[in-house]
Length: 360
Ligand code: NAD
Ligand code: TYD
Image 1: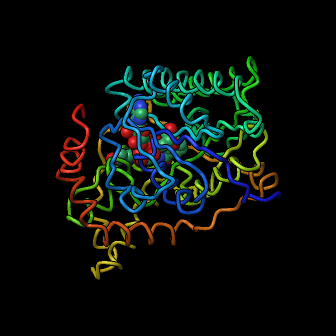
Image 2 (image 1 turned 90 degrees about the vertical axis):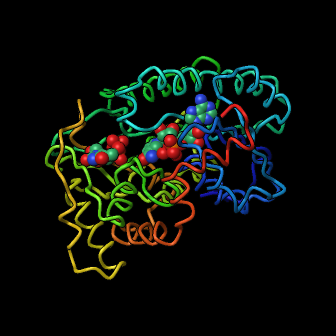
C-alpha cells in the first residue's frame, strides 16, 4: 500500500457532529495538522457539539452550522475552501425514525447528497492542479442491499434491494454518487458499512440504548424474538477503513466494510449485558432479565452480513477490535462519560446548542 501520510489539503466533513463523524474528526484533526478540516452540520437531534469539545479549538478545524440541502451555502463553502477531499457522513440514520418520517430522510439523504455532489463537481471541474487527487468519499450502509436469509453475504456485486425508507434514501444517494462518477467523471469512492457501535453513539440505537437502560435497571425492548442478525463493527475500524479509502481507494470503486461480527440481537444483548454486569460488579447475568420482547419493527430486515475481502486485499484493512473487547471498551466509555450521557438523556445538549445557534 502506498503511504497514507500524504495529506489532503482541505477536507470537507459533513455530519461531523454525529456519531461516526465525531469519531472520524477525533482521529483526523490531530493527525492531519497541516490540513484544513471543515465540519458542516445542521445539528439535528443527532448532532452534538459536546462530542467535539476535545478538538473544537484546534487551529486546523472549523465548524459550519448549516444544512447540506442549502446549495447556496454549500457552493459558497466550496468557493471559499476549494476542498480537495469530501467525506460525506451527514444523513438521517435511524430506521425507526424513517418509518415515522420518511420525507425527512428523502430530503437530507437524497437532496442533501445531490447538493453536495453538485457543488463538489462544479468546484472540481474548475479547479487548479492541486485537485488532481480529489476524492469524494460517500459513507453509505449495507442496508441498501436489503435483507439476507440465514446464509450468504453482501459483496460489491450484490444488487440493491432496500426495504426501509432509510435504506431506500441511502440507496438513492448511492445512485446519485455513481451517476456523478459516470456522467461527470467525479472521483468518488463509496463505502457500504455494517452496523457500527462505540463512543458518542446516540442512545436510540440498540447498543447504547441497552447500555443506558441496563445502567438504570430499565427494560430493554427487543423486537420480535431477537433473532435478527447484524454484523457489528467498532466505529474505529470503520474510520480506519475510510482513511484507507480516502488515501488509496480507486476512483469509482465501492468497498464493503464489515468485521465478521455477526450475531443475533439476543446473542449480542446477552454478551453486552454480561459485560455490563461485570463492569458494575453485579451478579453475573442478572441484567438478562431486563430483556423484554416487543412487537416487531415493520419490514424488519432479517440478516445483514458483509464480505469485506476487497477492502482487505486491495487496501490492506483489517479490524482491530473483536466484538467482545469492542463492546467492553464501549461499555467503559459510557460508564466513564456520565456528563456527556446525562446531557443527552436530559436534552440539555440541545440548550447548549441553542445558546450558540439561534435557529436550532
Ligand atoms: P448520526 O445520526 O449519528 O449523525 C448524523 C449527523 O448528520 C448529525 O450530526 C446530524 O446533525 C447531521 N445531519 C443530518 N442531516 C443533515 C443535514 N441536512 N445537513 C447537515 N447535517 C445533517 O449518524 P451516524 O451513525 O454517525 O452515521 C453517519 C453516516 O454513516 C450516515 O450517512 C449513515 O447512513 C452511515 N452509516 C451509519 C452506520 C451506523 O451503524 N451508524 C453504519 C453504516 C453507515
Ligand atoms: P439499530 O441499532 O436500530 O440498527 P439497524 O436497524 O440500522 O440495523 O437496530 C439494530 C438491531 O436491533 C435491529 O435488528 C433492530 C433491533 N432493535 C431492537 O430489537 N430493539 C430496539 O430498541 C432497537 C433500537 C433495535
